[in-house]
Image (cartoon, rainbow, N blue to C red):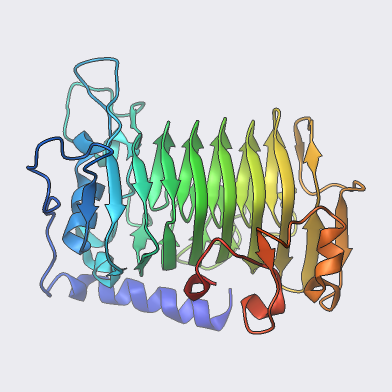
Length: 372
């Protein structure tokens, strides 16, 4: 781990007990919560401030699950302003922000449900509307292992639609968890994610980790990117690689485990530090199975540049692997649109290259320049 990351993480741990001394934002429903038909598509919940974000995080009843029937209600949410979530470092006795959609042990509002097996997913529609959420802090290192939790802004989604969500400087520190972590979504099932991005840091010791989505199934990801730095196989207290032979690492820039999912027009531009002995390691994807599709994606990991054309009809295997659909380019070639056009990248409608944006590498036109 770099000295910069070590110092930042250490300061976070030192300052946690003192943060609780300051004023704290408590959950507050949106201003239109009591309106007729609030949460419907024509009258979505208005997420306007940090109190609304905490309400969404800590009120599982409005994620869409109806515990009195087998059916779910799809609530709609829109972000209406930029939100600074720095204060989340002091929330929940140092555990920080609780992911939206998660395992019941971190919900604790219905005693009758089996706490070791029940998951409350987010099943709604969330539109970031061109605003950003910055400085989300998530810390599971203080929880007693074993922990069954999926971390990310959204921990677990099912039948959800998330778009235009931009997270800046998210900071996730994990202990001995046994599930998936992604900056935007931990576990994504039968959901869509589009026109979204994330930057920040993830420090984790085992299992599935990625800079965008940890684990997917039957889903679609389109027009997204991640600049999250990943430090995998790190013990939080000793900052050393785990020596446990049973430790499983699946690490990637965009998606840790891709199953029956399409990944289109997306990229990773960051730094991945994972144990050399980790076999399930990829710059874009760590592991995949099922009928998945990659089309027009690229990855920059440190100084390794990889461009992916169309890849489909995969078997269960680790990633990357050599195919004619993959190109390994130099830094100069990565700034040449012709190299991408040959792979099928659409520079008329989707992609563009300008020297002052994204380091001179391709960027997504459909995401506003202030997020690039």
